[in-house]
Amino acid sequence: MDTMSLMDQASSLVQGDWTLDSLAGQSADSWLSKLGQGGRLPSMLVGEDGSVSGFSGLNRWTSSLDLNKLAGGDFDLSPAAATKMAGSPEAMNLESQFFNALSQVEGFDLKSLSDGALRLLDSNGAELMKFVRG
Image 1 (cartoon, helix red, strand yellow):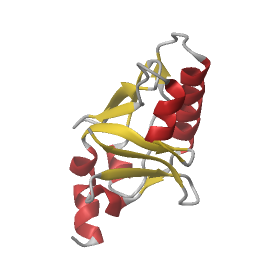
Image 2 (tube, rainbow, N blue to C red; image 1 turned 135 degrees about the vertical axis):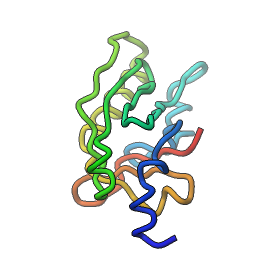
Image 3 (tube, rainbow, N blue to C red; image 1 turned 60 degrees about the horizontal axis):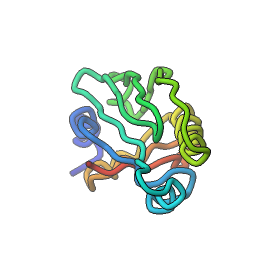
């Protein structure tokens, strides 16, 4: 698939359920081992209308994605709103790092979408976090 075809399909490729695979250079397995029994990884559900919601590792969150900018290669999320439950220090650390990274996202790796991954990038093109389907 060439880049232009992927760009045209970016909106439909991004839609659906995603689970965090890496954050801040640490794998999902590493985060899960820190969280202990019952710990859950952050997730994200992207709707057809650009609505975004998920789990941050501790709380539920919601945002919206600018689909017009997505077609241009930008991953522009509105500021996230979240519930405010407290939890273990490990879960609170994961959530803090998740939201910090999410607030820095400016783009995505288009080609990773065709491989079933969503790599979210900062303004310099460095990977902040990676999600996989599921």
